[in-house]
Length: 161
Image (cartoon, rainbow, N blue to C red; front, side, top):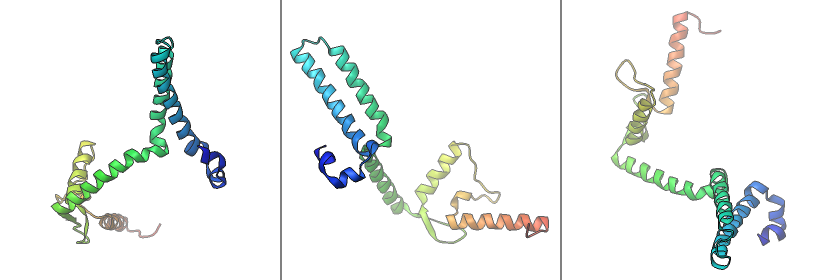
């Protein structure tokens, strides 16, 4: 906090929501938590209810702010580790090959999980030939879309306009 008051570079680049709010919330949580202990030890619990409610409010405010603030990286890093494990295990199990480009583009595990989730959400990307649109790589999907546009234009008999 002293650096935030004295360092010219920090003063020039700091903002309330990214630099001061995290410090204020952490200080408020610490002070109200210590206040609970102080009240219990020295004041025989006379203001315990007030201190406990104040502490609960500051903790709740911190938890509400957490996904939007700089401390979210604590949880984000754990998610990144999980994603890396998922990718590594997927590569070990095998890669998916696009039927259009014949190139590997994702892990087969990821594609199968994607099919399962989209089905559970009520989306059906099955094609009439028994394949699935999700088996295509991004390049293959763009090509399929271009072919569908071409076929629609051929059907209309107009290629432009």
